Length: 293
Ligand SMILES: O=C(O)CCC(=O)C(=O)O
Ligand SMILES: [Fe+2]
Image (tube, rainbow, N blue to C red; front, side, top):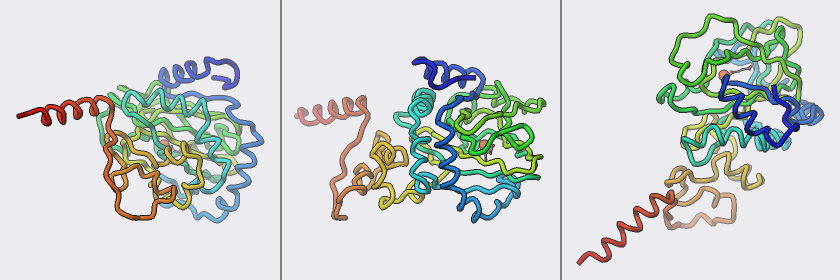
C-alpha cells in the first residue's frame, strides 16, 4: 500500500505495484474534504437516477456517467498528476496518447449481490495477454468495507494470466476511505462485492484507455463542443479533442479541437497529422517523385 505524498518515487512505486499484482491502492491521493464536497455535488443525481437493469450492472445498483460535466471537482480526479502519469506509463508502449475511457458514478445499495468477476478489457475483442488496454481508478465516495460491497480484486490475475481459468479464491476486498484511489489494470479480474450492510456504497470510476480504442463512454456525446470548450485544453484533449497520430479522430481532416474555438463552419483543408517516422517516410517518397524524370 502506498502513500501518494511520501516521496518523489511515488510514480515508480505505484507503477511497479500495479504491474506486479494487477492492482494497488494509493492512500490519501486527494483530501477527504475534496471527495466529501464532490459527493455532495453528486447527491441529487444519485437520488434521481433509476436503478440499473441487467445482471452485469446490477439491479440494486445505480450508475451515471458524464461526471466531468456534472461537477467541476471531477477534473482533479481525472487529471490527478500521479495517477494520470501512472496510466500513461503503463499504456504508452501501445499508444501515443491515452484517453478518458469512462467517468462514471456507481452506488451499490444494501442487498446488492456480488458482481460477476470480470476483466474490463473484455469490452474489446483484441489479443489477450499481450497488451494492456486500460487503467481503471476507483475513488470511494463512502468508506469501502468488506461488508458493504468494496471492490473485490484477484491479485496476479492480470497480463497473460487473463488466459487462465478464473481463480477459485474469493478475491481481496479493497478496503478504503474517501481520498484513497484503487488502481487496477484492464486485465485484472475484479467486481463489486456484495453489500450486506445497511448503507449505500458509493464510488467513482475514472478509466484511461489506449488513445486509439473506442471508449466505453461516448466522450464526444458526453462532452460536446459547447461543454468541452470550457475545459482546460489538456482535459479537452483527454476526452477526445485531439488526434491520435496518424490522423485518427480528425474533424474535416483537422484536429477536432478547432470546434472548441471560433471555427465558422466553413470548408477546411485536411492537414496531415503523422508520426515522425511516417513524416520522414512520406517526405522521402514525395521528394523522390519530384526528382524522378
Ligand atoms: O463498483 C465496483 O466496485 C466495480 C464495478 C465494475 O467493476 C464495473 O462495473 O465494471
Ligand atoms: Fe469492472
